[in-house]
Image (cartoon, rainbow, N blue to C red; front, side, top):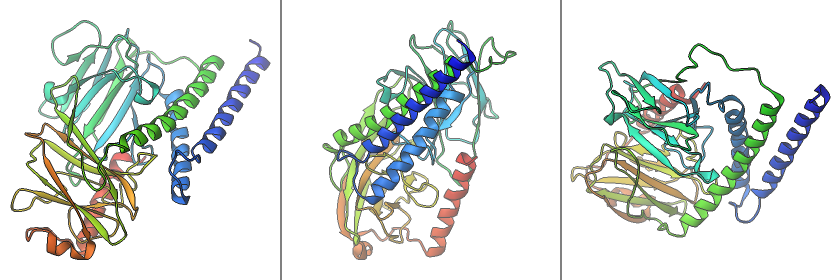
Length: 394
């Protein structure tokens, strides 16, 4: 291929990418996507975010010989309903190679390493998990894990035959005191080598892969949510469902929808729940984002939720500050989604929902409810802002 032919190939590939993104911008305005000015504004922001992430994945993190961990699904690269209590890491791998993952996770609540054959929205769903609770972690928090090759002593997990990526979910449930951990990955045998220079073929392939990843991401999750919402109770929570995995962690998910007037609140009374991890989060429709993680209580975990004297937890879901600690802030939206996650729960919790006027909350909540002043709320928001600033912002 001559220099001129190479430049023309890249020009044509990029032009096709731009055409596909233009078409996708038209597509997300169609009737099967969320409607209204706010939905459109957030939809184009979501498209811009996924364009950035898709190109970054394809260009900078797609070499299985020289993998690096990319932090994705953070506050500005949300897709597929991320958990605000997680930091998500991604690295591209080759199933015929052996990889070493190492670092220090002392200032976390643990982590789960996952070997996958691809992204859910690209039609791949096979995954194998290994929890940090199954690994030997040194007293100082340092660890080393080998993935692939022959089974060996120490921390090891097999490589799936069609594996494409290694993912890590790192848990944080004490936002006031925990800080980002140290995670690294290297392909065994390439520690002293460096990647080759970028070629025309690889650059064109990255552009094409990015376009496909972005398209499938936006279309899949909108369709998935539309299907799931048919079965989710309005102003309630469905029974928890256990998600199968390859680790000893028992993870459950429950979901529901809220539909509230400006002066209404949904009170979720949760009883019979004891677990290593409890998390509730609100999501937008269509884009499956959590809204503003840093400045609003769009998520709550077990250390951010007050437990009443009777052992129950009352979560108040509404768009205006009700003055309670257990407030799930919907940002003033009339509709949206609610998800509840647990890890290693003793039993399936019971959730009793009730819609009440915001002005009547004091009369329906128990005397042991923890109320918050304006100053208390400012402290709560400062903790969120500083923790997520340390964990997510570059």
